[in-house]
Length: 152
Ligand SMILES: [Cu+2]
Image 1 (cartoon, rainbow, N blue to C red):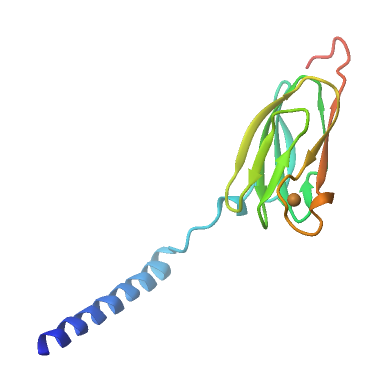
Image 2: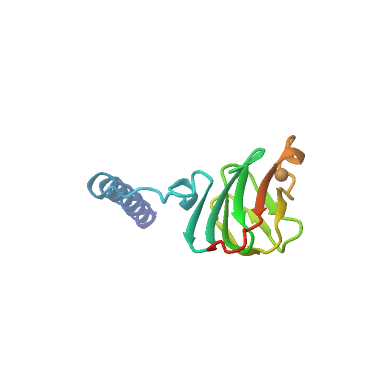
């Protein structure tokens, strides 16, 4: 009986000691809970950037019920690195006419590479039911005809 009390008392002291260590690490070293990769730049808003000749980086941010950016333009033959994150629930991203089919899972970055060879308008659609406005969730990628002799 006496030995059990001693073990319980020591266990309690040890738990309190660990809690004090946590508070010390937080105040002295700024240790905190890990953040989420998708909550920091450049994944907080959608954008397209040209990163090389005829090579683009396109970052989509999905949220109920839009894709950001809603419309982008690239020249025909463009190779696009496509990144997708979500700011709320699980979404999908599909581009009919291509092999692009991604899932946007909270906290994760989805990636694929696509080459747009034919000019035209490509629709970016959500393929994972995400709420009342799911069917309106759409963006466009306009692939423009390149003029002959253009340095693309
Ligand atoms: Cu959806």
